[in-house]
Length: 457
Image 1 (spheres, one colour):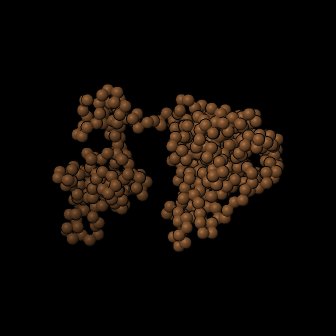
Image 2 (cartoon, rainbow, N blue to C red):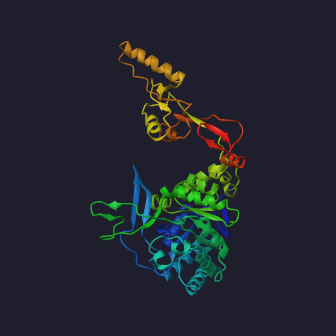
Image 3 (cartoon, one colour):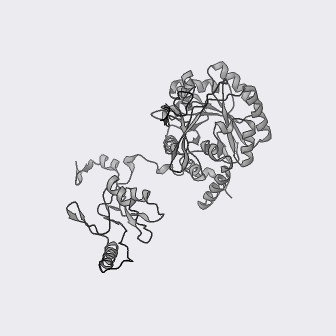
């Protein structure tokens, strides 16, 4: 059985699955129930000078029958007294000594930081996470993403913290920047032990068209909020991967953003995350989802002959490259399995209206002034069906399987993505040449693309 336990910047937990700082970690009772369900760690909902939150607080983007594909919140940090939170943190750590308890913090002055860090140390917590990512409410007060977007300020603030504590320090980064590497290097320069990313994305998720007010509505108005959930996963994955491969960056990364399943978690870990944090999926489905995450990751590691989760960290990152390093001689074409095709023609419509016009309806051969070689099987089936129908048969349907002109197929994958039948369309490799050739190679060698082919420059 693979070892799922981790040591993240000196913080130990029985598995890499942590709850992110958010409503699911708002109290000791919640976190203890989460640990009982199987979560390895939790980042406490951000402590600061307690504030008054608004009502309502959440809005979402749905897709078809999937609710909360993306979740927007305008909720701020804890509205519970600091003394209560600190007492509960100590209680949780005492009852669950082998689980990771990290305290998220957001304060303003060096004196405030020094005071709260001493009080956090007294709870026995395993580390602190500095909230440099909140994109609403707190940033207007000079905290949250207002710090995360200013590398020099971020470095200075991390130094304040490092001067006041011996606890492991994680800097939580905002995605609301043009380049994630800059604030990450700033956190490293300040002495942070690790970073976590991404925090929420500044957003407006919709408008109440009856009242003509953005959502979530607070009386007669609203504000931008923080966007999270499955919709932000691609953005988070890119930032984690980009940061992990930076030669000047050497800190552990805790991955956050749209993690809903063991597969999501494994993808973050494979691109460089040493732990993963989950929020929206728990708000949607409850703490119990961690059971499937643990089981799924365990079985995946077994299938890869990996003895520990640490072996997976960064294992896919070597495959994350700049566009100019990709193999231009690698080529795939679409193949349609006529036995599985249901004749919905989604592939044909998508290809003709949204891609490269290489998928054709049965019987179609003339294309833009030339005759394309209709697939032999499709041609035979179409002819047989047409002949039977012409003879008067009423129990025969026209042959309905589209066919692919492989001479025109660029291998874009769109047909495969829209096809509703698993395994009906396959992208089959047909290399242009056996050797690897990249754009960067061509630039170095003085070659380039020109219309109609390659040309020496």
